[in-house]
Image (tube, rainbow, N blue to C red; front, side, top):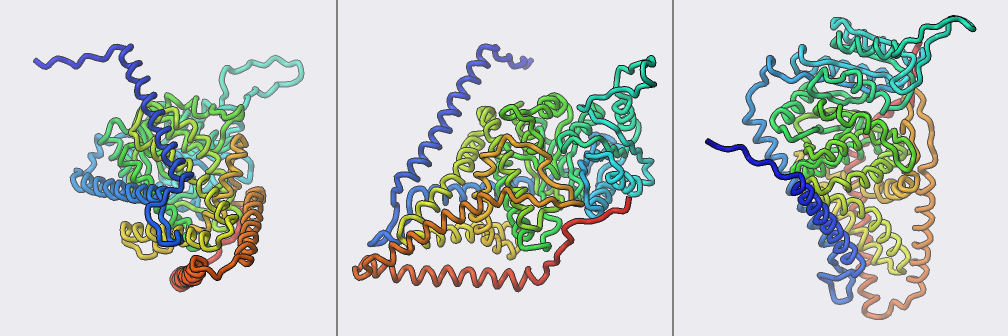
Length: 576
């Protein structure tokens, strides 16, 4: 008879955990040291006679990184496809119970209706699915969302409730008069009413006192308790694919060690502007290359807020710690999805991504609002990077490697750009710009092949948006990591936030100063020697190639995309 495997002694587990921590720290320091040395030393691997066309060790490392990332992403897509082909149909009788939670805040009625209609159309057994929408705000201006919920789910006996408070706002019973006797109730009747509705109705919408997105999500999670097996998160500007939930559920059903799974988030409004179009291409690569690669190693760093599924028994264990997260003494409000993912990773559970689950979410079409969004996301990225580092030892070494590489990348890029702008050699600057666009084009070409859509080639146009907008915004995010808030404005009133423009202005002044210095030094230099003559030839040819590349890309964009764009209104009005 087979004997049960002996459990390791607690002391040996502690020693094993300590050893993994030491090895992980050593590995991280090794990667950090090698990358820093390769960058600082500038070791050339290939060069022409005058060192004008040089390819260094750091560039080779980045190229190998992109090749490895693309290869593992492709292998993950293959693995997902094989598993999907071998699956049997879902048995409705044994399907896991799921709650779809929707977070809403001053949502555009057009987007909200799409979200709720898509929730109704989900291909999942009705008896095993609940829908719970929580509105952040309970004023008269917010109640149109409750009305729309009742309208869309009219045949589902929906329940709606306006809560004067929320789980974390002090509740005080109303006084019967000055000096009058009051019987103080032990618990908030609003909270009891919300929890009773969630237990007794399949479709529930609650409008509560404003508290931010994390407060809204907490209400949904806390009210559900242990009533369901899985919890799906979704935003009110998101349109779910009918098969989105089913594909997420299959991943958790098939892999018990997976604690959370995310899907493919695409852009709902790609043709609103050039910003939203480039964002749509960037989103596809972020999910289907970068997160697909992470999924190959079971360590997806962020289960995105619009489309994610969690094991409820695990979520309830860290719910309070997730809500009460603080950074430098400040209560954290944004970055809720990254911290949910990190909490799951901290417990040693795997996180996955499946491209078979899909949704479409709104993205900013105006540059300023996009910049504010990216600054907010960068804040949560840097903050969660520090928390994530505590649990590298519990997961595959790729998680450590990629965190170090992606964490250092913006700093090395900024240092490279500044060094070249002030180097006094126009060709050196142009050569790096050509290399950047060449790498961007190669990455875009791979994405076009993987997706089977030639339009992905235009992803290479995203490089200037990153270099001129997102890169300086990251440094503002790093300097203001401890500032919290909802992080976005409701779409009814799009508040203008000009603070993210400050680093862009400073960045532009730095680059213009360096460019002027380099041009002045080049103009004063002696160009009669053979090396300078060769540099002049390279400069003319490179400038022509660079200009030709941009003319071609802009022509493709204008001919195939720009003419299809239409501008949406910056806000909306609702009759209350």
